[in-house]
Amino acid sequence: MPKDWPPVSKDRDDDQFLWVALAGDAEYIISDDKHLLKLKGSFIIPIGTPENFFEWVKIAHPMPRPDW
Image 1 (cartoon, rainbow, N blue to C red):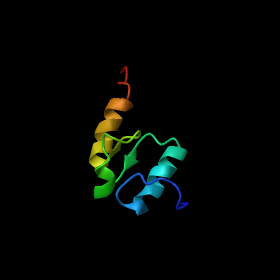
Image 2 (image 1 turned 90 degrees about the horizontal axis):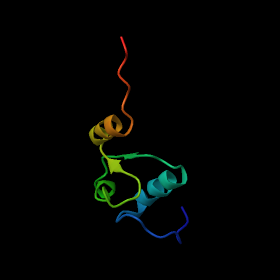
Image 3 (image 1 turned 90 degrees about the vertical axis):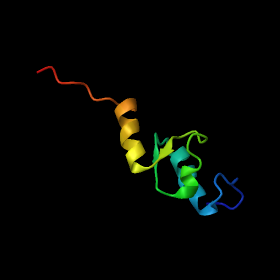
Image 4 (image 1 turned 45 degrees about the horizontal axis):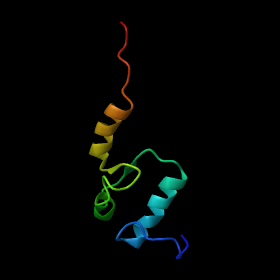
């Protein structure tokens, strides 16, 4: 990642993941990293733990119930 790119998180090493998520049009960032989780709710892409992700998927992409 170029050094002249603006920092996004407090841990500069984490910024590469945020920039890639933006460039790749990610819908969600799954992480247990404490620096990334501090951005939860303030970054344009939702960020959360694996557990948070499964709850988000149930809401954002609900599965249709079968018509048995």
